[in-house]
Length: 119
Image (tube, rainbow, N blue to C red; front, side):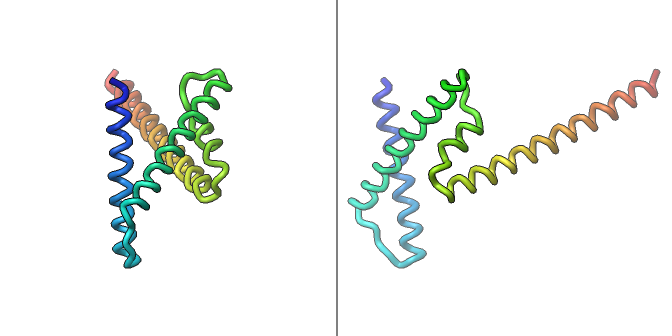
């Protein structure tokens, strides 16, 4: 059963890599061979497997069963570009969560004020 899911995931990675190579090829007037696409897809799939195992290990080391953003930042630390991207995304998400909390707190306060004025 898991083998079917594994093969579908691998096929999805291959398909996505093929589409990206096609778009890059069009933009730079290059053609990627089927062998090149297959090699990039296989490398991508293997790297994702390494990332997944590292993420699990970092979470387990911290005695957690859930992967955190800090685990993701640790995995990305070897690639400067990826690390910067992950850091920026993390900061964006944190900012969005702070704004959402602020908005919800404001709603709660106005609701409390409305209830007090009715009484």
